[in-house]
Length: 138
Image (cartoon, rainbow, N blue to C red; front, side, top):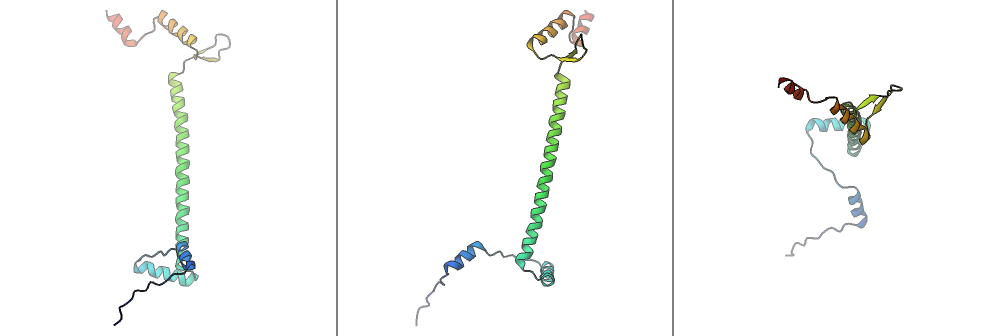
């Protein structure tokens, strides 16, 4: 008796390249889906690959649209937040006074202006409301 020799089938280089560029994609589906796929294939005369390409294309469009919507919403929200935050901070912390000549607002922004305002407020008795109440109670 001859020993059973296991001969490996030699694959040609062109077949190897083909298999590398077009890998096998296999899956199991349920009966209803299989019937729907077969109806589409018969009606449209297309292959499983064409059906899969169409499905992937639809999902790519959906993913792209969702990403664009998310990016747009983020940008709008960010811009609105930055604008509102800046306006809120400006209204809270920006000190302005009218010009004694033209009446247009002047912003306190130099250290000298801030020191002058501080000195004026001290000299004219500006302070915390609680501190003034305590002083009156004494």
